[in-house]
Structure formats: C-alpha cells, structure tokens
Amino acid sequence: MSTVIEDYLKAIYKLQSSTRKVSTSALAERMGVTAPSATSMITRLSELGFVRHDRYRGVELTEAGARTALEVIRHHRLWELYLAEVLRVPLDQVHQEAERLEHALSDELEERIDDALGHPALDPHGDPIPTREGKVSEEGARPLSTVAVGVEAVVSRVPDSDPALLRYLGELGLLPGQRVRLTERAPFGGTLFIDVNGQRRVLSDELAQRVLVTE
Ligand SMILES: [Zn+2]
Image 1 (cartoon, rainbow, N blue to C red):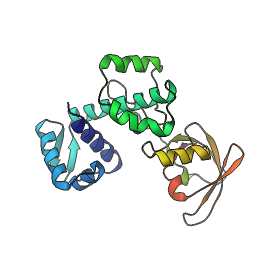
Image 2: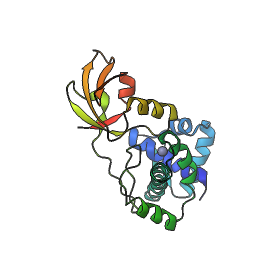
Image 3: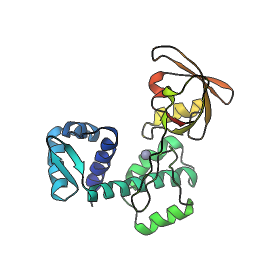
C-alpha cells in the first residue's frame, strides 16, 4: 500500500476523533493539499473500500479503512517509543522520524519491537498505542487548563508533532508522568501559575489547553 494512502487514512482517523463530520476542505487543509486533489484522493480511497463519502455525512472510514489507519498509528507510536527509549533520540525528534518509519514495518519487526518494549500501552507523548487487534483506549484525560486551583494532577499527554513546543514543555518540566499543582489562575482565560517540583511555572491558557492531565 502506498505511503500517501496510509497518510490519508491516518489523517481521516484523527479528524474523526476530534470533529463529528470530516469535510473535504478540513482533510485538504490537514494534508496540505488543494481541495480538488483531496477530492480525487477521496474518490480513490472510496474505490479501494477504505472510505464512504457523501455531502451530508462527509468522509468516513469503513471498517477496513479504520483497521489500516490504526495499524499505521500503532507502527508510528511503537517507533516513537523505541526511538526514545532504546535509541535515546530526543523527544522532540521522534515524531518526524516515525512519520517515515511507520510505513516500513513488517509484522515480524513490529512484534520484536513490541516485545523489546514490554508491550507498552503508551508512546512517549502519552498517546495510546493501538493493540495488534486494532483496539485503542482513549482514557479520560482532560486539559490542564480545566484543573481547579489547588488541585494536583499528573501530565498524561502532550502534542507530538511540534518540536519547538515539545522542547518548551520539556524546559518547563511538563512532560508525561510529571506531577503538577495549579496554584493560581488569572480570571477570564488568563495565565496559569503551576507548581512543578517546587518550581513556579507560568503558562498561557492556550498552551494549558494542549497539555492533558489526569487527576
Ligand atoms: Zn508522533
């Protein structure tokens, strides 16, 4: 299967998890292509049995499409963890490497990586790794911006694809597994003050929306 097809299926899967209806224009924007070229790809994916498309419901993955998307996502996240843990690739670089490697992984190597890592449930950004059967558990994490003042929480998930953002979160100590406590919040969606290992950190509400925590 072509790399481009796999990338489209993955993009549709991710858009489906964040919006109800996936439009051609949203998909085109995500893939960085024009609407006509996204439209012709959707036609091709539909001929291959990977998506259904109508103007009212938008683009939807079929079961075969979802299975393929989850397999690519599994590859991606296993690679990220392998690169970070075994090869010590810095966290802000593993996503870009995994974007290429995800398309080239035999079932045998996938199993060896999974074994070597001890059948992990999460990648280094805290994103769940789908099982080989295509099951994925999106547990109840919520944005750090919604935590109440005085409450302790643990960072569980950070965005994976923006290296500068990841380096910044690393400098603040806000990576998965870190315990934090919200000490103060300016009113009307303003700045958040957070205690991280006894250090006072200042965070914009916008950034705090992108860091997920569990309590
Ligand atoms: Zn990634």
